[in-house]
Image 1 (cartoon, rainbow, N blue to C red):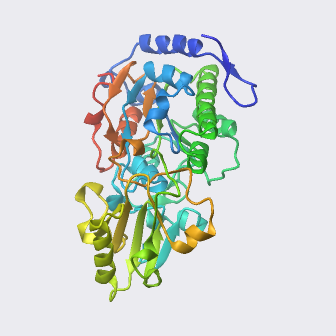
Image 2 (cartoon, helix red, strand yellow):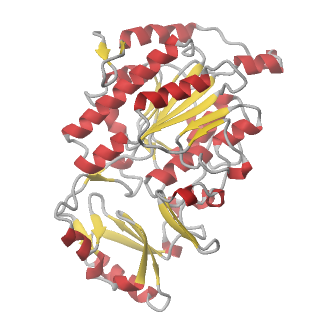
Image 3 (tube, one colour):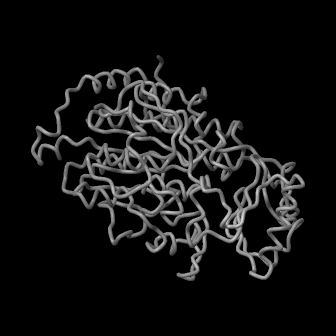
Length: 430
């Protein structure tokens, strides 16, 4: 197989063939039973774990001609047919569900935007003060689980990692800064993993948003989105090259995930909410396609009945009062869950007349936040490393299970969570 440049600058070159040779060496490495090792030897024998997220990486992107390196990598590790997001299938709820292994109704992060009446505060992903406020976050993030058990962690951007949850910080952590170059993010976490000092970590996270951004702006099949997928492929090649060059390849398990998929939307598939209800009497909490509203008590049932009538007459959405939200969403049993949920059909957008009229190009590109059962909302999952069975596969599974996998790979006891390690039978060595 021909070598190919793996980063946009062309500075680095790495071949898939070279990595496959490394993978074969990994498979043939001998292992010891943990029962035969002392505590110090267990620490020395522990595999490191690097958790990577490419926001908006839809499951079927992995089969694209734009991702040849990732395809080879997945064949020499493990992959799932899809990673099913929690509801809503949006960025903050899913990244935090991955970190704590809990559904939104159990971890408090029920949306990218939300309101807490007890705290008297509103949360949004762009509000730095609230993002760093630990009172929003429930459950125990994997980096806390690790640090509590003497395993150092480093987080290069992950939802929740900027807040001192349980009054704990990872050994290394960074406030989100979208201007940090891609390669610099990788270089930083690899430096943490391989520092060979008192600040060396055994667990690290790194996050990238550009694929999601291009999918939103241009849609799933656009040249710009395909170019972004090529960029993902290049970065993973660079990462594996750097792991090998630092001697970390034989002791590091890579777990690659995403938070959700993406589906194309258009101006021809838009619903204006003010066509059905008086929007001056509602508070819009989170946006399309899973719109949540708090409604004046005296108007709540009337608004619901009007929307329910529209649904029955063929409007492309489903409307639920809080208490009627389907149990399978694992979403309604939290104080922060708003009065009403309006969930658009796949490919549709819910907005207002003013917003639609004021934006001639609205709506176009791609969106997520739909019912997680839609395959278009499913994200990618793959893993490779010394503890992963090469060539193994899994059926689709929910993101809440990833926490159990991470704890297992790190050799630490998990905190209470909604996941199960049994999900990963077949991809882990006994």
